[in-house]
Length: 119
Image (cartoon, rainbow, N blue to C red; front, side, top):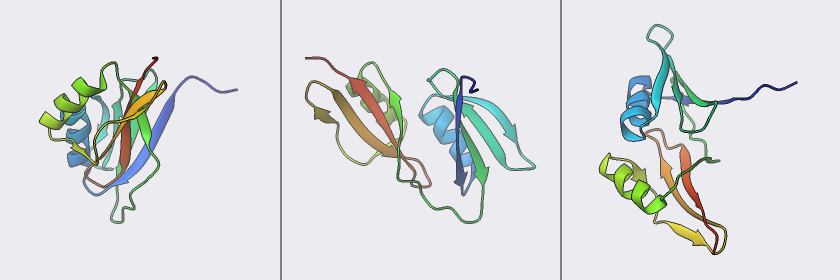
């Protein structure tokens, strides 16, 4: 019944700012952009997973998090911070399970980086 793939949509205040944040800041690639309708889609690092943006007058930040798995969270944290990504705290470790760190996009939506660990 289902096909492979997932697209997460967010309303944003400024589509161009969000596209820049997710492409230049996070390193994802622009897949689609419609200037007239003010919508865009970026492809993430996860196979068949995209994030869509629709410009809207009213934006309520989403507090649930899309989580992106990385190979080395410390390295990703430093690199993304240098690109201007705003992290809301430091890297947290859940022993024998995972390391996590949360960041927000320009509209206040929450996202996380995750590194699975095995002790």
